[in-house]
Image 1 (tube, helix red, strand yellow):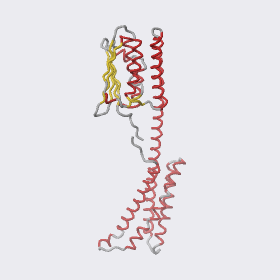
Image 2 (cartoon, one colour; image 1 turned 90 degrees about the horizontal axis):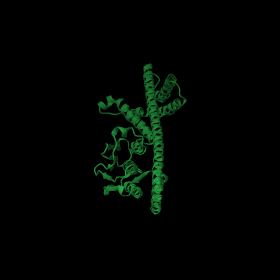
Image 3 (tube, rainbow, N blue to C red; image 1 turned 45 degrees about the vertical axis):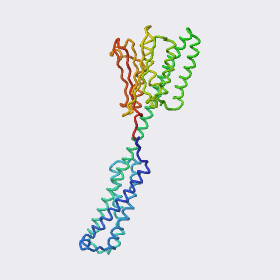
Amino acid sequence: MTTSPSKPARLSLMWRIYIASWVVYGLFLSFADQLDLVAAGRLDTGRWLLTFASLFPSAILLTLAWPLTGFLGRRGYRLPTVIGIHVAAAFTFSVVSQTPFWMSFHANRPVSWYVWPLLYHVMTYLLGAGIFHLIRAAEAAHRQALAMKEAQNLVIASELSALRNKLNPHFLFNTLHSIIALTQRNPAAAETALFQFSDMLRYVLDTERSGSDRVTLAAELDFVRDYLELEQLRLGERLHVEWDLDDDAGDHALPALSLQPLVENSIKHAFNPHSRPGILQIRTRRDPDTGVLSMTVRDTGPGADPAALAAATGLGLRTIERRLQLDYGSRAALRVKSAPGEGFCVSVTIPAAPEESYA
């Protein structure tokens, strides 16, 4: 994540550039004033210092244009009023800054000797004031962009929280329903299942309590194993699970409940409605070059027609897809592949880190 410099740092940089610009300008003007002497290999040091020092009043007085631009911006004056105030300030600046220079010489000078420097300093002021206005406009745009980014982050955080709140009760309700059904057939197994369920509930609550829903793939897989053991008690021989896991990907961070709803979706559609046995395959891989994690859940159920799948109103898969979009942008994806009689396959790709914002 990249961050922009703070406001004091930007202002400090602005004033350093301001001072450096005046120094460079003063050196240039001082040498330009003695081009004839420089060409002859001589330099009038006193004249050079006087020319250079004559810019000090202008450089100091022009800094007052900075608070003036801020005042005009806060008051919200119309453009003609702002221009009028700056024109008056420009002539005042020119007269005040030039007076010490004029007083250093005899008064017997032609009028043009006074007029041209006067107009020159008017233009200097207007240029400086214009630059100050541009800097303030850029600063206002920067603050507005930060405010918009902060508002966007709050919206995303709120939406993510709402999505998690939709997903968690959905999962909890289904699991409790399975345990209730089990108590009617095997009370002892139901008691064991309740202890497993308490561990699963702790996993969900811990992610909520921590304020971050990031977990490791290893933790998510342990959670899925507990869930499948509960379902195994209910489904018995109908459910056969095949694991194909990347042992090196266990530390990969991902949103909690990213894998379990994919498994739950297969249980719901491929195993619950049917009495025949089936296979559930869970596969994880992490690309060693890009660090992208892929998780695939495949079942041997009846599958679904792609058109019917697109029109489905199920919550789990859509919620996961939306969470991935909010967290990772286009770098994450959820893909579904299915056809009647060919089972159901869901693949999720998750990059190494959430999408970073730039302030």
